Length: 113
Image (cartoon, rainbow, N blue to C red; front, top):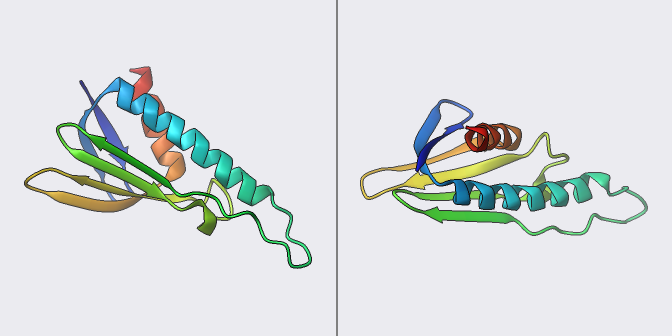
């Protein structure tokens, strides 16, 4: 088990995370990126709206409980997207936002090490 560092909008958090869980999260993020690209690529026209996309809800239970949530329907592009992170155990609960692009970078660094 290695340590994953997530850089938040203000500060950072580090916790034990498995490679398998990181790969699963990476898969979830790929699907989220496709949803964000579909919304960004929709051409606004005479009364047409982009198709509503499913929110991403990722949950991991290990030494800590991690939940990552993103509603792609409220962001104009993948670069503007933010995610809500909840990290908790029996003694503490942390809820914060992070940029999606930063999460992707943090996850790539974790998987490369």
